[in-house]
Length: 277
Image (cartoon, rainbow, N blue to C red; front, side):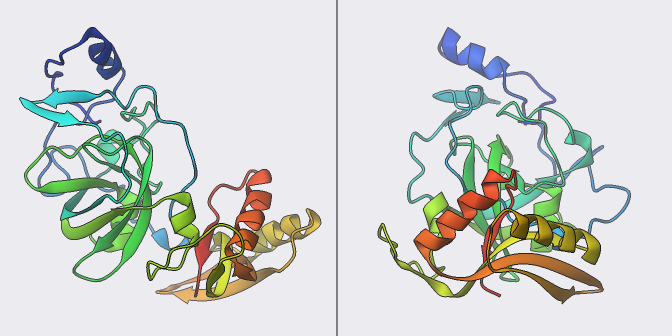
């Protein structure tokens, strides 16, 4: 949480101790960001910043008290976020909080694909879809907030740029929980049983995206040297910038995608995600 005020009273000493470890986001910012906050001095080209990749993680020890209070309002942290969907207004936060501790104890990085939510378990992964332009991103929820009006999620600056809402400050959005297995499944809501369920047509695992072809080629060579097959370098024109994507595929089954993803993560690469374009 991003804080400028004090904590509300919480019933037990245990939850008080837990809340003292939270980074705090109690100051309302309108629109989107407030006094002293805002974008970086140089505009961000977020084309090469991939979505957060859902993975199984333990709950944050500091970010999940049973409940907490902010300005007289009590919020209950979800035990289970399965099936969570919500619509409302998204805002974003930037330079004022960059590097400060979030509710999960991690430093806030406005260039990462993260978000704050009032009651989802920390960490969680959600897909946020801009209802005005149809753009969507997957972000990792690692902070608490926003505490103003009907806002349902507070996005990092990078996520706001990807959604095309950074200039307006706020936007109407749909938010839905994404599990690691859902992230590998088709977007049409098809259930994916265990084993060799079919993957989406022409599925690729995107491992990285670079403005430098040399850097992309270096990653491609590293993957091949470590025994990963089907690694290709795919140039793509995005707005005014040419981006060089490093992808693996085509992959034809969910278990094949999961196996390849584990190989990639074994090399310390955490930002791989499924791409169908």
